[in-house]
Length: 187
Ligand SMILES: Cc1cc2nc3c(=O)[nH]c(=O)nc-3n(C[C@H](O)[C@H](O)[C@H](O)COP(=O)(O)OP(=O)(O)OC[C@H]3O[C@@H](n4cnc5c(N)ncnc54)[C@H](O)[C@@H]3O)c2cc1C
Image (cartoon, rainbow, N blue to C red):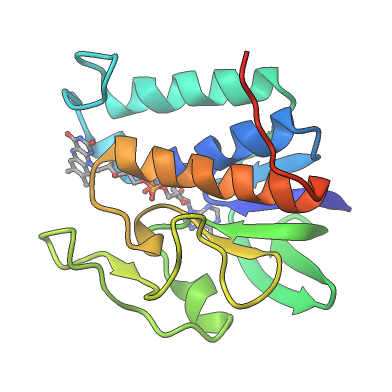
């Protein structure tokens, strides 16, 4: 049993994991390496880093979250279900249970439709290819307790820094719920 499982280790999912793991919650991220960030040769609008490739940005994220204890699994999740009060995800290798589940799968909207969410076009992304769930707050909490949505699927605009910030918000909200009091991590 994990405290937190995150399907999708792109920008948003990894940002969420940093905060949940730092808060002491056992956290695993499943990813199958098709982050949109990997298509970006050079990002120039990530504040504090004047130029970086998407691949290098994700590499740095992975190193940073690993250092606080996040387990990174290079596995495709093929099924997800609410086995109340927990969540279960199944990969090609195994099934895992958790208390908090984050969907951060971006182009892959199957988890959302399987959990019963209506998806609409994310109008903040001009291509029209990105879907989202309407009506979420910035923390990505859905009407199902413990189930969160992170990244562009939550309605975030298309920039990586925004997806990361929203993912961080998800992580802090989970840490707050788990602790029963506002979670603050300031060094
Ligand atoms: C061509 C292009 C250029 C861009 N240029 C810029 C730019 O210059 N600046 C900028 O700020 N942003 C840019 N972006 C946008 C940026 O890439 C996105 O904002 C960011 O990647 C969104 O983060 P995310 O976490 O929501 O999704 P993603 O980063 O796409 O992550 C989703 C993750 O979910 C995983 N996943 C999905 N389904 C499963 C499953 N079943 N099992 C396991 N894992 C799964 C995928 O492998 C993927 O890693 C660009 C995007 C594109 C496509």
